[in-house]
Image (cartoon, rainbow, N blue to C red; front, side, top):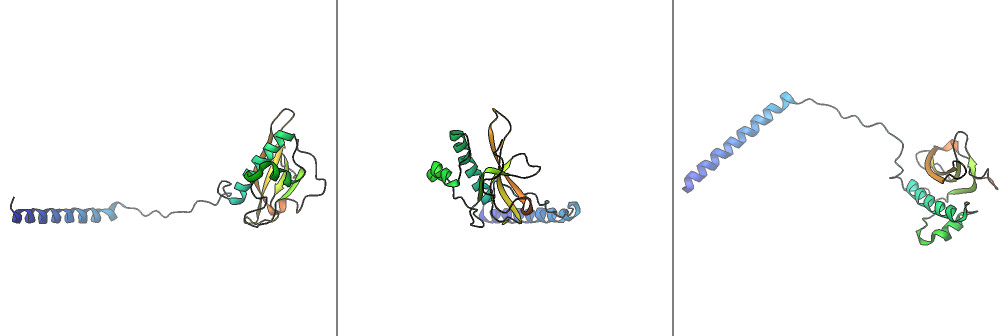
Length: 168
């Protein structure tokens, strides 16, 4: 094929491609409907993404290991720090920088099946507090710890000396 024929063929192909593109663009408005995007409703924070909740999950694992070895919670958090060694995360909220409040006997919250054993000192998570809730559902049942979020007014300001009832 001669160079002139190749150039003419390329020009025709380019013109046909341009016509096809213009036809496609012309057809778009006829078949398109604008649908506004509505934001998803705000839900509770994802504990897997929140640094405080993630830290509490790590601490919960260390508390469970301690409980398994001693059949009780430690009298103070320094014991889990020693038991967990390097693997034990810092025992303060990564957002506020304040140490978590701890009560080995648990703080009872009406309507909650379990006792608060560790929680934020301040409501620094959009007015809410992350906490560890410990429960044992009955004799011979496993000791359980959950990370839950509460409104600030639902929790006591500080654990009382001696605490409340032991987790059951």
